Length: 188
Image (cartoon, rainbow, N blue to C red):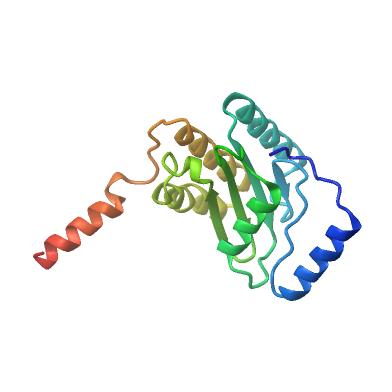
């Protein structure tokens, strides 16, 4: 869907206030200001602009709509719930292809999630998304290299979405291999 905030009617606002009141503990989804919404201020203006351009160019080339949202904290909201609400509110990805992707970072909570539309799940399975968080984002964040980590993560996600084999982390860290070794050890 288009990344242009839609005009809201008074009725919609009234209805959404009712919804917010009923979900008192749910964090508000920030309005979509572009492909990069950096509420936790992890990027400089230049870094955010460069990433916005990279994601826009990628979308022009592939149709895949990728976005970044950083928030200071989830305020006790579940990251899985919040990321789904963001993807739905922002209408990421083409409706017919469901090929949107959200990288969500809750900075103070030290939580990250890559929410992948069904249309990209074959190219970016949960195992790969998890590896990108553990081996690309987490180490960069520990060193305070936020822009670098985010940029590299998007490079890996873009390559994977285009069908490239993306090697992340150590090959022996394959969870399937781990299970296989566990089963061997158990003598199954």
